[in-house]
Image 1: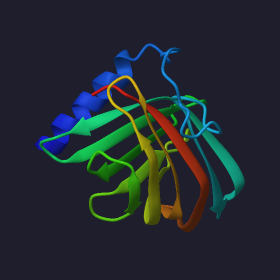
Image 2: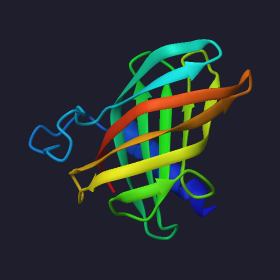
Image 3: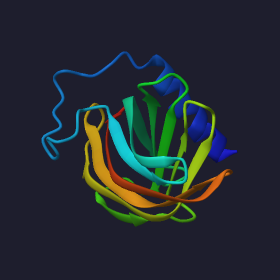
Length: 158
């Protein structure tokens, strides 16, 4: 039930976000456009496919001790969600409480089954949560996908 509350709150934040706050900075990682995410997929039908997302928002749920970030894709239907324990910078191993899932524009889900999420900056409300990720993933049609050069920057809305 609490997970549903977090997801609902994140979805509302995403639906009502109006773009980037031009007064907020993203100084901890200037190679990442504020409010964006990108990654490269390799394996099966993906051969160095760069996937780009925008409109990144997220926040912290104290009841669950969980941070959740959500991004929409440049192509319609593309969605990415990153979750990790706590609310601070650090390195998180993908597993039970830390994960990344994306839905490709064609509807195919891809889930990271191993790897790391490195949060380099965790700002307060109105600032950005910034970091990188990489790992191994799978989809219903492809059990072996490599995710590399993942980077994200999401506006912290809650």
